[in-house]
Length: 527
Image 1: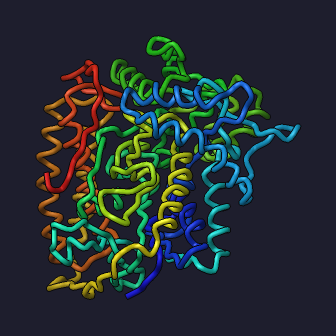
Image 2: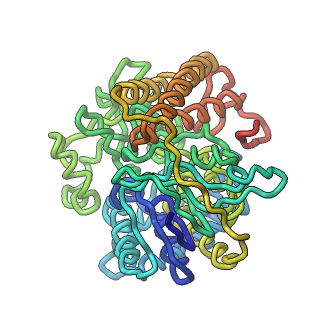
Image 3: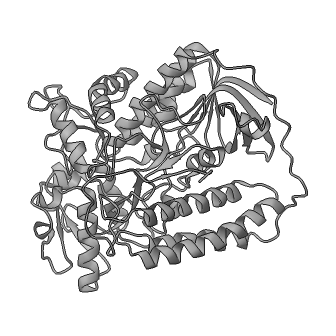
């Protein structure tokens, strides 16, 4: 049994920001499911949005976010995040993050789809890498922070689970953790932050890293926290189309710098779908590409920035240039093939302005949280902003309320029961593949009720099989991911079936209109 003042599950921008601030007030454990360079933060290319220029205002950033969010953003949360954004970005700079600057020393800012001004701080086209590197360096130097790699949180430890007194508030006091050596033990803490990122791996094609299997959402839901708006899964419009590319993302900033979307025959098409053309919100662009591909029977569309100077392209998009070149595409000379891929979950565990959940002492931040910032569709580069703002706010609330929790319970050691090592690994690989294909084919960019019902039926059957396998076999990292992935996939489908309208990222042919008043889709374990 290991005891800390603060337990952080997940090591991206939200988790590391939180850890750095609470570390001044107690011991901190940061759990990395794999290694510290596996988080979604590391993969983020575009940047982090914050008001900085004289011609920009908080009001404009707020309005852009609200418009993109399709009527479901919480205005007070949007205003809070936008106004606190510049200070949080400055803290990253102070820690050593090197965002691109002009020759005169001012920051070079990108503009992306849905933004009315240039406000995207970036480090070339590898902004997430720069932020992750900066935060990791600071965390590793701090004497109060213990970083644990290959550490998989299995389930949260809560009072309702062990005391069975449901009349009292449910409190979290730690988690069971599977470590790299196969040992499972409880980690106890006064405050727990879940910052495990998204769930893109529930889809066959995704821009997400392999760790994005929805672990934090599944854990919080099983513990009794509500989730909301799980149907709003953002598909990034432009991922490289190549069998070995693993849906390598091509940042929206390229379109912000003039890249054009064209069909395989060279015909442009975005002007038919939105006045802003290539700079339309992501959901519009993704649906337009999906429609054009299906209409003409094409496997992909093309993204062309070759009309810009070669030096400009190499300077601003060095990572993309080199990656595309490795697959035989020179973006300085010709367009590259792209397709949409699952990219970002706008829903998640319901939280308030401090990242608090339904469960006392349990906080969430980053992509696994549903704060109300994104609504029905995330505005580009608001995700890193949300992570760093709520990592900070959850830390401040944790610090102010530390030591106020009742005496912790000591849970029993992990009980494996009669579990044995599995000799049928194929059960995991088969179910994993089937879930992802089912989600891609039936719960994609354009949906119907019949497809969603088919998906739910199949996923329910698979979940029962997975649960039986989970009870019988020794716990492994792959099995934990499959268990969580199957639950999150079901939550997405149930949320999509519950929304009888088309709004933001959820577009269904059976309900093409948008209701006059937007409401959240909320799911709870008790329901």
